[in-house]
Length: 205
Figure 1 (cartoon, rainbow, N blue to C red):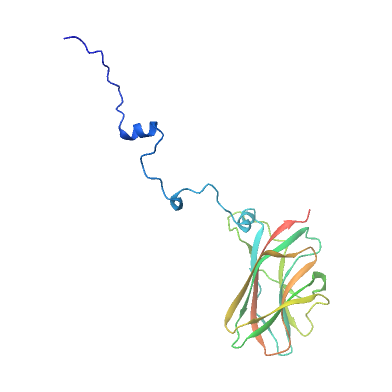
Figure 2 (figure 1 turned 90 degrees about the horizontal axis):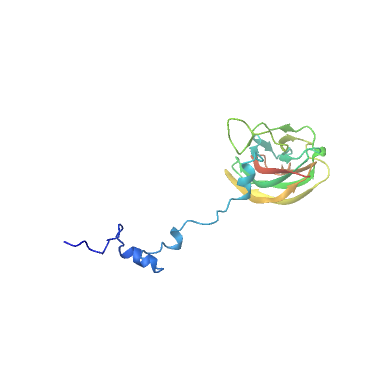
């Protein structure tokens, strides 16, 4: 019997292959919501935190009012060499009545007799600890603890047994030698508050 001149291709082309050779994709295209995004948005504070430049912390409880003044503050030392970008701050009122708190800006050097909080940490928790921040969280109570000069820029009423928060996203900036302070005035009923804040640091140069 004569050998056939037809040699069968070693690969069988099915219908999908034929369509693909013609420029068609025979399978349904995934909806846009299921497709892999080409760009991923990384929040700026997250990228800063990855470089050990984002910090958070809080004061101890501060009891003031009833002729006693008190404050909690985020301070930038005069020769720190960095700018503090305030990301957020929180005020917690432990009292059974509302507490009036003033947010104040002024010079760090005018603060005297304040304690420095140890409840401060970088937001990047790792075995090899991040370098400590230049910014300091400070607090004090007494008859004459408020610094000289500066200005109260906003006043907040904190409801009883609750916490309020302000998200600033770095719009409040403290240069070297400047302080942001939450002041509990001497006027009014005695109240107990706690001040906490988060910030990141960048070199001024």
